[in-house]
Every structure is written in structure tokens, then in C-alpha cells.
Image (cartoon, rainbow, N blue to C red; front, top):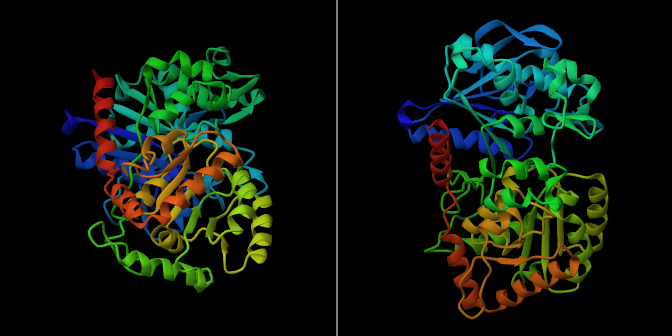
Length: 485
């Protein structure tokens, strides 16, 4: 069956072409893993300025296609890479996608995001017609593609090329829903009857993600725990009721990790490679990381705690801010890499000056440094308020860098609590979202670090874990086949 299965991914970003977050990693990796299982996968994405100016040249494969929207009929071209085996296609329309960023600037979202992504979703049908591609299943991602299931049910039901096609919506982060003023509803090209409690209406606004949840044949989240959490008021962002009503069609499938990129045995971006059998190189990576951040050599034997994150409340930075003074009072080093909210940029700049030699901060996106932090740190901190899946804790496990995480979403699904007596487990978890619980968890990990035999055992447990995409792809394939039946 897999050999005959045709799947169209519809997503707003994907590596190696355009990325703002974990969605891009999934869209870049999952289709390739599915292809290895025999699935015919194509990916449709906007033709952003970032794609146009990237290292992989593209050329048109279809031109002047008519896209029917609430704004009228607008034409687009379809571009595709001319080098490499990338199953990507791009919807090109400069007025919508030739921008410096994907969704907005630091000043806020683009004013016409509804028009941009309604146009992108509406382009699915002409794309399939132009390439004569008849998907069995259309796999949509997040609010930017959530109109596709709505259009399939309410606008394209008579189209032979999409007859019988099923839709799957993956929610990568429920906090982002695509909310717009109801006055814009006519721009979607849908009947006003769909602006209702059983359709796209949400507290007198348009909610694109809600439309996808209501109309998709099935919904997935990027971890099992998160699929349960979003049905509660704490994590549901107002959509817990509609998600609960679809509980029978809601599944959690954990994201995978691309071990071609994230593997200490082969990683070209770290100072020394190492493995489960021979972990000696990790000490060289720690020394290199200390040097990169100007940390004190007197602390070489002390634990080094790494953070790579969006600097935001969602990622638990209010907890980091609360516990940092207590950590800095001990023989502990901390390195932090990331960008995010301006208040945390300012705070970290000040703290780095306050604790020279103990606290290293870089406000940037730096892939090479991210790899060195994973390899050179002893522990990795992820105190997220919520975490649909999380990837860094899975990278950390592979690198023998022990995660200290909040027991939420994908963190709870991938890290198991260390037992001090048995030495079983792969990391340290805390439940309560509070500085006290976070600090107590870090202290427990620091105590374990002092017991070298126990720490070696925990590292072995961690490095033995397998979160490869192959596993996740098989789970998706199983769901695709169930939907087709």
C-alpha cells in the first residue's frame, strides 16, 4: 500500500529553504523518511524571498495558474529546485511572499497574513491540476495551512482530482491559531454560514486553526502527552472544547531527530567526536565550549549547564531568571544561546557582566555553537511552561548531556526520571511550574553529577535512546493507511 500512497504536505516552512521553528525541521525530515518507506510525497510551500535568495536554485514548473480567492482570481507560478533530490514545490506570488521575514517583523505580524495564507491554501487545487498530482492524503501543518481541509470540504468537493482525498492536520503549537477580524471573512471565499460556532468563528473573530480542526479527517500533535494536554483549559487556549469533541480523531505522534545532523560520533561542528563506547572526546568539547564563552578554567571540573532556546516566557525564562542567582552562588557554569523577547535580551546582557567567567551568553542564532553546547555541556535545561514536542532534549540525550526538564508535552514523553538507587532513567523532571521546583530539580541533578559512577550510567542510558525519524514515519504511515480505509 505504501508504494501506491501519494501524500501532499502543505506547510508554511521547511528546511533547508525557510525556517522559524521546529515546524521547518519536521517538514524537512518527515517526508524524506516517508519516501524511504515507499510513499510518493510532495511538499508545497510559499516561495519566500529567503527561498529565492537561498543556495539551491529554482526554476518554474508551471506558470500563470489561476487561484480563486475571496479577493478574486489571482495568478501564481509554481517553482521547484533544480538541484538535489528535494520534493519541494513553491507557490510564487511576489506581492504575498517577497518579504524580509516569513510571518512578520519585530514590530508585529504582517497586516495581510490572512490574505497571504488563504491564497497559499487556495493554490493547492491549481497546483495538483497543473502537475496532474492526485494525492490520496493532504497533510496540512498549523494555522497557515488549516484552510485546506475547509476548502476541500466546502469548495472543492466536485473536483475529480481531489475526490476521495483525506486530510490530516498537524498542530505543532496550539498557541498560534491564525486569528483575524471577522470583517475579513469574505476574503476567504467561503459562505458566511461557516462563520459560526461550528465553523471558523472564535469569540467573534476568524480562527483558521479551528477551521482545520473542525474539517480535517484527523488531527495530530507532535507528542502523545501534548495531544492530551490541549484538551484541558490550561493548555487548550480556548480550543479545548472543540478538540475534546474530536478526541476520537486526535492522535499524538512524537517528532523524530535527524541523527545525520545530530550525532556526536560524526558531528563535524564539535571539537572532538565521541560515542557511547568511547566518551572521552566530550571533555575536549567541554573545554572548547568554556573557551568559546570565556569561562574560568578554574571551574573545569564543575558542572556546565547549557540552554539553547527562544528567550521567551513559554520556554520558562521567567524560571531561569528566578533561579540564576542561586546557581551563580555555587561552583556551576551556565551558557545560554538564543534570541527572543527584548526584556530577556536586556536582562541577560546585564547578568553576563555580573558573572564573568561563570555565565556565558550569546544573543544569536548560531548553529555551530548550538552543536558545541550540546556536546560540551554536562546538563541541558528546558523548564518550558509547555512544550508540544521539543527537539533539544532529544539531541541532548544523544550527546550524553543530561536533560533537566519540566514534565510537560514532549519533554515528559522523551525523558525518564533518574532513579538514584537503580541508576535507571535518562534525566531529571519537575512537575510544578515554579522556581522552587525547578531549582530543587537542578540541585538533584547536581548531586547526581558528583557521583561519577552514577553519572556515567545515566549518560549511557541517555545515549542509548533512539528517537530517529524512521520510527515517527512508520507511525504516520500507519495513520495514513487507517484514514484511507
